[in-house]
Length: 276
Image (cartoon, rainbow, N blue to C red; front, top):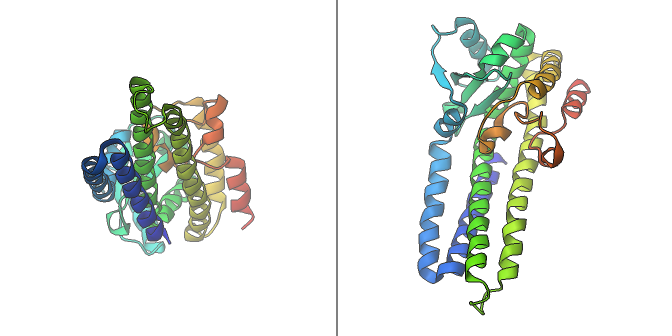
């Protein structure tokens, strides 16, 4: 199912870019945008882990750098029947964690410095199992491709908006008002797609994490603590990679942004987790 989602998103991205290229530049524009779509799809598949780690300023560690953490990840990966993932640490004070990589053989689990200092062993095991669950279900690739698609739609909407502004009504074949409307609606649709995928993935990863550890209590306790600290400790990160984190890095921000959070409400996650 996850690979089908990836294929659907990549196909949708390609069709969207080719259609936009054809609309703005005819057959030549369609071919150029097809090339752009191909580069985006290949890049999002092969280099997603490097891009996300760079977003968070994370560095890959070896066993000798953090023996206890490395051993815990290794032990839980065996329980989840997964290859040992790459382990990384991001120099961020907000307690958080995420998984990335194109498949289980190239999985990466990253912890912020803040989460390693804030959680006890049971809580950290729950968080680690949650990230391993994302790897097991191949959520990381889906999320990365969805982010690429959202970024591409937003880019096209920006091009359309500025094109309508500068072209005005000179081009009788194209309605500038319709283009402006599309430029507003398209980014909203992209965010909604990304949000829906990410939210359902979080619920599934929570359930699988409890199965890997053998109890939901550690993860539930960690989620409560992460929800509280995320509101107190800000974290600067590219919004394109925010949905990969176990707790919304921007949860401390109020206003309209809460309506478009890529994470489900923490209370709901905890309730579902403990009800299993």
